[in-house]
Image (cartoon, rainbow, N blue to C red; front, side):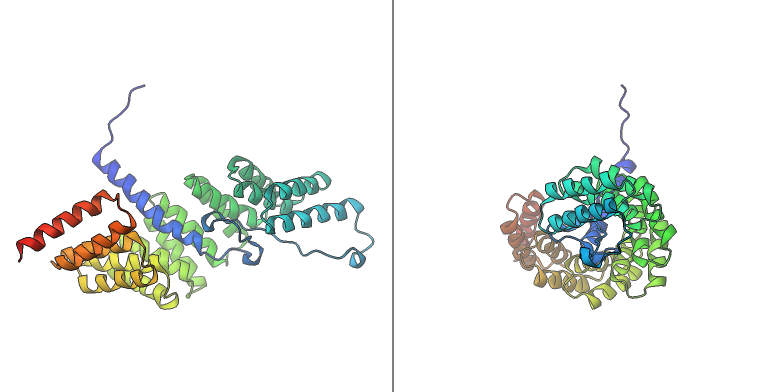
Amino acid sequence: MKWLPITQKEVELRYFRSRYATELLVVLSFLPTLFSACVTDNEPATNKAVQFQQVEIPPTKRKTQIPNTTMKAEEHYNRGVRYQGQGAQDQAIQEFQAAIGLRLDYAEAYNNLGTAYQSLGRYDQAIKAYQRSVEVKPDMIQGYHNLGNLYLLQGEVDQAIVAYQGVIHFEPKLAVAYVDLGRAYGMSGQLDQAIEEFKNALNLDPNLVEAHYALGVSFRHQGIFPLAIESLQKVVGQRPNFTEAYINLGYAYRDQGTLEEATEAFRAAGQIEPNNYRVSHELGITYMKQHRYEKAIIAFQKALKIRPDAVQTQNNLMVAQARSAKNR
């Protein structure tokens, strides 16, 4: 097989997509889920999957005409939900499978089966379960949403786009769904389309922080710094403890050339997370651009206490020390 050389443009595009994807995936850690009360709390934020939680109905209050198999299926389903809440995913899987065995069109059970598989890292099985949930119930937006999130985490962006479009098809007024779709477009390199989707989200919910954050990140990567700053300022105004928003705000100010404002943004991020390596490193770079080498040295030294093996920071520290000595 003949390997073709990778051009510099392709290298830059791959780096851009990687950086942009990393920043937008932050949205997954705080994006409101479609049914947030149904999400288990024992999984990492980026792997959380929406669950359709059914309220248990005491047997004495059930209508007598409900078939016995349906009642048994619901009992297995509810036990599975309880096991998931306890973090017992293997037992939850057994219960959801039992529920499906009794009721082959149990979309909610397929969906939760997928979330259990996903929490265990069994992604192929999770995808099959989510797909089955929307096959038996075409308007199962939880299944589409979970499919999109899992595809996105795996880098299968085109499939994620199709899945998120499924959510919007059945819930066109669900603002967060447009943020999801916009993230997928952005990670595929379609920034203009991503921005349109974030704007669609804000048309439905002008105060949706997730949309403002994603829009700010997108504008920054497009080099439209005033609009990026405007969006990110709205984010920190509503969520003053959102570190990544301050970091991106610092980037936007610095790229725009307003270094004092960039310094303040990075310092604000450092007050929220004092042991954040990237904050200290970027603060040091910003001080370097201001020729404030002594402060840059302090920032780089702090960054190296957090990550002693950071070669780039080591090099920056040596440059700052050399320039500081030269100016004495």
